[in-house]
Amino acid sequence: MTEEYNFKCICGLTTRVLGFPDGSLSTKSRKRPLQAARAVASYIARTEENIHRAIIGKVLKRNRSLIYHYERTHKKAFANSLVYRNTFNKVYKAYIDIDGTKEMFTDKDFMKSFLLKNGVSQKLKSDVKLQINSGKTSCIINTSYFDYSNQLENVKIALENYHYSVKII
Image (spheres, rainbow, N blue to C red):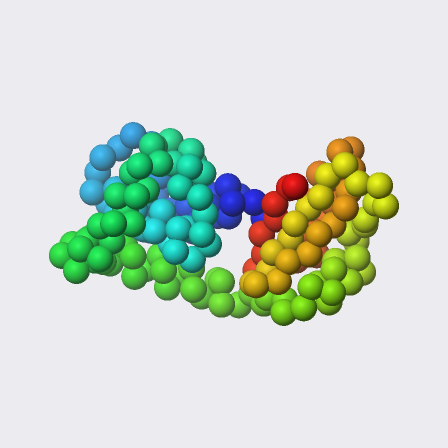
């Protein structure tokens, strides 16, 4: 849905796959398995979902400059660290298995009509616009300040089996 929500889902997947308690990636622990898990979740979020570094840093309670470090050292860590390599392989495989089952839209008109048929409504006079992206396709849903949270929930329900993100404009 939003970048922060998507990254929290990636963090949840990472902790589930590795058997860590929920929320453990944002702790101050410097144990090697947790460091590797943070780096892997950050790297997947940057390369696969294109999530902004500041959002990743906020969720992990770290500075965004650390995310640059994770990106820059990925190849070296993957080649030289058994802990990092095993962590990356487990989490990435689980991510691909989940992500691969979701579909994407290829036509913006079809996506908009699909949303409107599945409970999302549009206002003629809009205060807020929701930009919904699925793959390389994007559509705009016009809504109001009072109704946009309901529309976000409707989009979430309608696109449960689709790969998508939403930006509030």
